[in-house]
Amino acid sequence: MTRPIRLAISGASGRMGLALLDLVRDDDRFELVQAIVSSGSPRLGKSAYGDVSALRFSDWSESQSADVVVDFSGPDGLGAALAYCESSGASLVTGTTGLSAEIEDHLAKAAERIAVLRAANFSLGVAVLTRLLREAAAALPGWDLDIVEAHHGRKEDAPSGTALALGHAAAAGRGATLDELAVYTREGRPGARKAGTIGFAVMRGGDIVGEHQAWLMGQGERIELGHRATDRSIFARGALEAAAWIAGRAPGTWTIEDVIAAKV
Image 1 (spheres, rainbow, N blue to C red):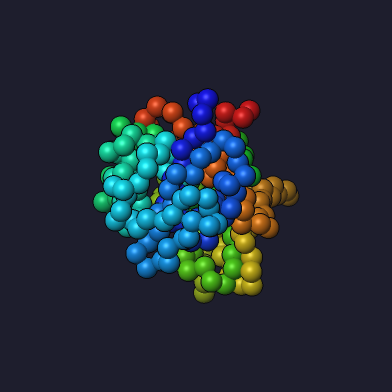
Image 2 (image 1 turned 90 degrees about the horizontal axis):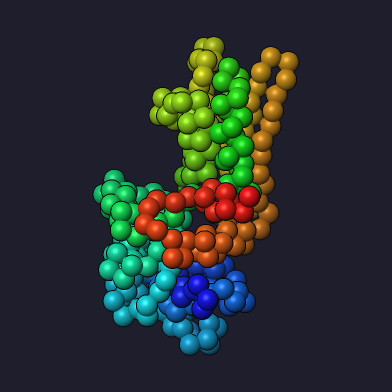
């Protein structure tokens, strides 16, 4: 596009939404046309973000035309954003997780008509880690594999969505599914490790932004692949890279790895 990409942010009053709003003001690739917040969120004033004021999820019909919607809201907010994208033809970038089967199905069907990019983690470094782990798991099929993740004590889900995404990538590298290989708990006397399984370990505490390690363990040697986030803004930067990449893209389901592949 020769003009700036018209961007709408869904979930604008959340932690990720505020980070996106802060970054997009100084990014000449974009024109922020709308900020969307949940019904329980305070409206965002115009003073901080030029002439843009916030709408509720229920007010998408009043939104200015957007080329791309970036969504970090929640299941209800994502549903409203998806409906807007389908009606307007806008592309969708979403990092919302914890979705119902109904919304998952809706996303899959919508991708037949619009471009949809989903990621559990928008860090470009994690995207590279995912690719490396898939390749390593495929190259070393007989090695044991565990994924270890750590986050701040306020995080409610475990393992993290990123850890699960890494597990899916590793399982795919070995021609299987994570449902077939995952082991989420070990306690008491679980017995010897079953060959081919992918184990998970979780730590919660302090203000850890996010750390993920994959251990591939052979006889007499071990490979450790890892990523450590020290600044939450990396996720917002990755989401904006995804938004710039997907603008004008053909319908389909895309991933952050597709964005990385375009840079290689």
